[in-house]
Image: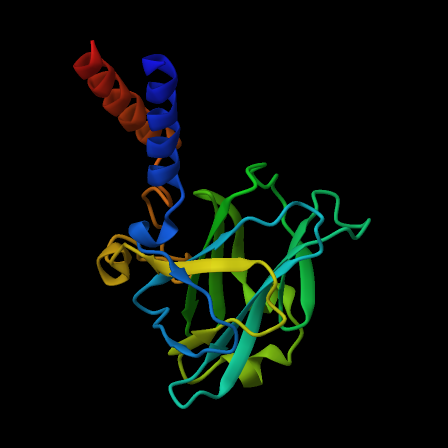
Length: 218
């Protein structure tokens, strides 16, 4: 009987340490809410649990300080036949397939890094793997310049069309300090660090607690 009780405790501990994103700083997304955010100093992480080819999508709106819409960045879990790996991203009405294999985990953390000067430089990571990097001038037509260039992005939002974004948070890395190590105008600032706590650490903690409890019983 004691053995089954210990197994139950193990399961509860494991669930408790893995099922609370808000304890790790994640904030639930609220559609059509404008959120203060400065891409010049921060990168954004978005958490999803959408399956490949589910036709769900991340829609990230970006605004000026006066809440004027500058543009939108999207990530699609698409079934389109021309998108072989099932994922694409979009900006200024252009849909571009990712040129690397996206991690197969259902739970994904997408990290978006942007810098706007004479062009819009961007990076997208998925579970710490760089999956896209470039400039809008390389993927967009000329219309993007009138919308994107000029005033900086100071707010973000997830519109009602967003069906994939579950949580968001600031990626904890100081962009200004990182930029000091990179003198290239064309390079987007690189970020390092873990997007989510490793599952192995959580399971090790759960096992430790269970063994400690078991030792107390016997």
